[in-house]
Image 1 (cartoon, rainbow, N blue to C red):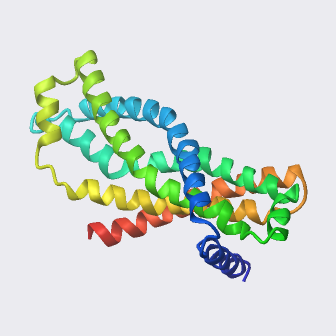
Image 2 (tube, rainbow, N blue to C red):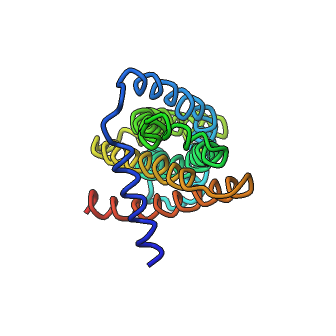
Length: 246
């Protein structure tokens, strides 16, 4: 029953959040600000992790493909598939849930306990729409670009460190990443990314918006936002994989 209670509150909050804005120009400017804060601000950590994860996948693949029946270009193929289908959209989204989700929950939660949200309501502003909708729209717009960059850097990191460590040649690696490439894999990854972006921002905003108490409760709301966002990302990752890849 508690789960249904929270689900109902979440649905009602999202209905309010996506209500008609009072002034479109304000929401547009706020969305641009959120794109810079939530998206551009997360690009650095996503890039570093992508490069080194691509390197790790390449090196591990080369050491595990010990059979003479497995061609060397399979290293590039395994790296491409791992990065595009799972690592970039899912693992990076889990990392963003920790960084972006905690930030959103803390920001909105602090506004709740300091009565700033109540002040917005007194002024006749739809606080849910003003605080949540720009964040959701910004994440849904910018996260696919972050994931595309992550894909490129992951594959590039595999190529670079594969050559530097001597586990695979440039020709074999590039041939592997081109071998039987299906563009739908990228489409599949971006669909997942959009869903994950909505989950991260909306769930984190929900926990922040309904924070009660003081600074201690803000921290708890931030922790809950990250935990539940990660759980939902994993659940929807399974469901979307079943739906799109079957």
